[in-house]
Image (tube, rainbow, N blue to C red):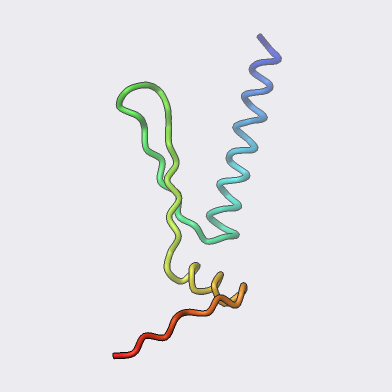
Length: 68
């Protein structure tokens, strides 16, 4: 029983660390949604447009030019 508690605590810390990295380092937005059916929790990851632009510039993604 104690090993399961320790494992769950380690998982919780790893999840918190990963979520911190996504939010504070990568600039992503996280939204937790609880399931209406069971005890599951889903995490929606949203990317602000500024982060998309920055990432596109870093990988030198070229946007198509549209003619009006």
